[in-house]
Image 1: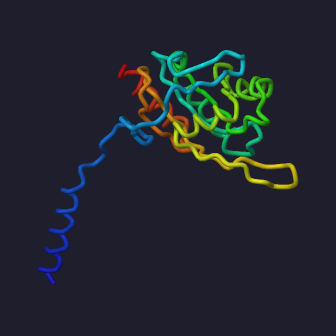
Image 2: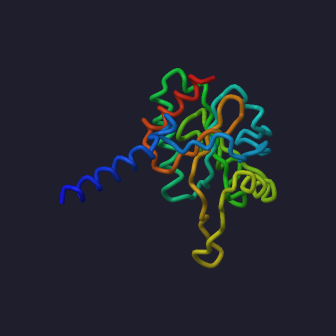
Length: 194
């Protein structure tokens, strides 16, 4: 009986010794060094061509979605707006980009109404179908039309947010539903590491 209990304690101690504990201070998934992204050659909702280089020096968050998304997209943009408010003045050092995965329906006018409604500093990005597919490939994002009725569809798509540091290097992936305080904590770490 005692030997059995000692064996269990020894196994537990060995397992605990194998666990180095948390390796990152981030709440999101640390993907530092991953090959994700690219130049992101799209146009913002004001008609200005954009690439990642335009935002050098800022922490950049990129999320993919579409304006007719019933739940995840508006929730994500709302959560990120709350995180920006938690950052206070440092929010000016962060740029949120909403990339549409539905270029057929998401016109610049629609993006101009939709995206800034969550935060006036957020930018909506769009491109041709080919440019959109290129960005989806660069970010390894899944997006697919799913018919719902004749001539109607929804977009099935990844809902992760990719976070880049001020040098344009991908650092984090934030899952949909991440709490605004966790997002703000991760953004502060990146802003303070610059």
